[in-house]
Length: 248
Image (tube, rainbow, N blue to C red; front, side, top):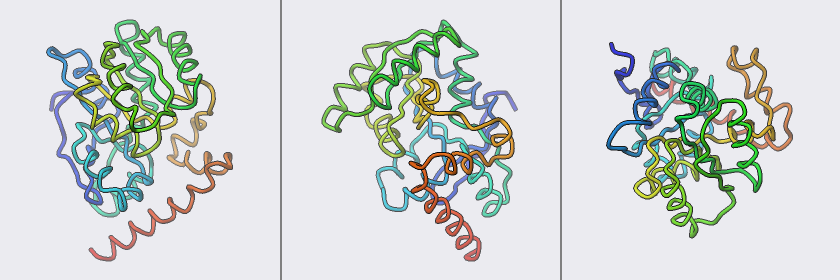
């Protein structure tokens, strides 16, 4: 199997899941970034909350089903794949994808930072230039209304970005990346959640030991009151997996 060849795509709760290692995912994304002619591709980093949300958001389901690459972002997806599909799925988290591409490509990579509160994307861009030497195609906060989507997509398209990082919350970011891909034209668009905040220093990356054990979500929920409301969704996901397993 060549480095960029595709293992067979899995289906988990009606959603696609590509069982690729981090290195394989980075190889594939690297190929898309600079291919000629440029073609827009969308990337979803699947986690349990996406699956819970998908039960009530058919548009979110549609864009995930159309994504070019869907990786396992968290240990919950690894657990579900093992329980329901009998498959061992490697993790390729959003933070590792983003920083991996920046490390690989440095100055040749033009990145557009789209998301978070005003000022945060700017700080993330500055830190990424300092740490990885990337080129900044543009920045824009994520607090704009849907009727401004076209304007923002055109801004990205005019920037010549190779990589679009969209951090506007689950569902919103993936729908934007997919719906407006012919306008933003980014060869790789990743819905990256809180990665922009972490790059900016506005949020803390979970310690290495929690990431290695796959329990970083416990650390995040315990340490951030704003995340306490997400715990019931994680419990709901576990219940969904167990119910699906009982159904066979």
